[in-house]
Length: 546
Image 1 (spheres, one colour):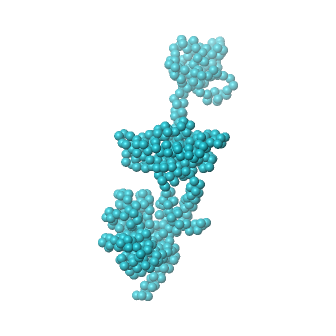
Image 2: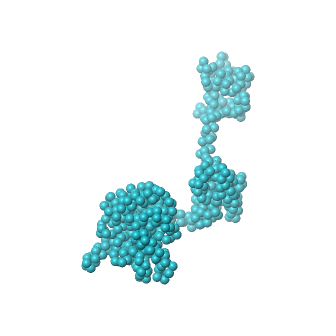
Image 3: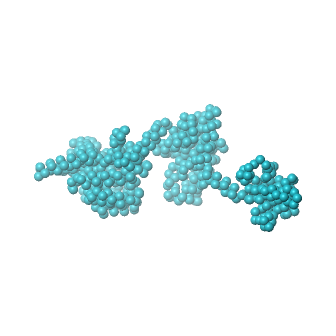
């Protein structure tokens, strides 16, 4: 019963001649042979490739259990088996009982998993893991010859726009089409992989000189730029390529990929639609940027950043009416680091949100110590609006500091309004409903539109310092300032001029009717302790005049 009724295929073989003595019903059903056919066969008749017997001596039980055998069914198909054997007596002769576990589907699943672990699921191209293995083999070969390896990192230009306008389905088809064109452009021995959503990497072997990589880059760019017809849409997309070459740009796969990636960033930012070779200065800049990111993260966590305050002065009375909070970073090793150096890093890495939160809270706490008629202005990055918690952040800063909302002024740039986001406008209106004042910073620097002033009622417009510089000797700048002041008067908003540095500029601004000024002529940015002394001196002077 254990043999005949067993659902696992079982075969009984003679030990001396390997002839099949008996099979159970499960074996007949699984292999497709009738019982009479089985009894004319040996176990080796079923084996596809192996001459060795399943019960061959010299293997441990663990090794025997881990072995996979391939058998041939009656219809010619191959199956994978795990075979378990046990010796016994069949009548008066020694025999071997085999239990045959079909693991064909398991092996296929394992093969699929192994493939997926090393390939991109969308295009079927190798992923980073497999690419690095291929690169290591190519680099090993070049160490024994004078050939070089070129790594071309390709990024599609404006791929995000395709996804947003035509949908991700079209975007996926475009990526598959790009992969197909790349493969048809390359030699069989060249490696191709997809590393990120819109980035592909080509590894070119047998390179003798940089010109070989240039020829391939141009051929690829030409192939990619041809139109694609996808679900009735004609899609045209460009690409940029960064090129790194061994051994000068790296002797191992990871270094070469990193160098090519930096070259791609350069191609996208400076040229777009062409190629750029890696240069050592790129790595130096990347290392410096990485060091700034690490130190900045630490400075934010340990409150190593400080707000400095630059006065906003009423041009008619000369009084300080407010102060703009400007972030300063006194680095323990490098001294004072310019905001122009670390703010872009903060925006690229997402650190601008904790940095902005820290400065807002510190500025509100400091301003709470100032006289009631002096406001504090804080700059907001467009990225801070995208987190969705800006309103709660401002409310919390006001609550913790006790600063009245009317004394907080938030400065935003015109680029924020370019997004035309309902969420942005809703947040701005909610902040203004709290009583917070809103100021448009850097007005007139390239995106100015009266529709912005119509979409949201600002309390202040700040004239960019580029229009104030040498104002007295520049009639065109005077006309622009006059127009902005006239616009402000008509809208009932305050007009503030930034970057005032000379008496001539101040005189001209007063003549044009500008309300406020800010710049080195009045004061540099100062730490809070100096600001408190400055405001105290102003209060004493006002009292004496009164």
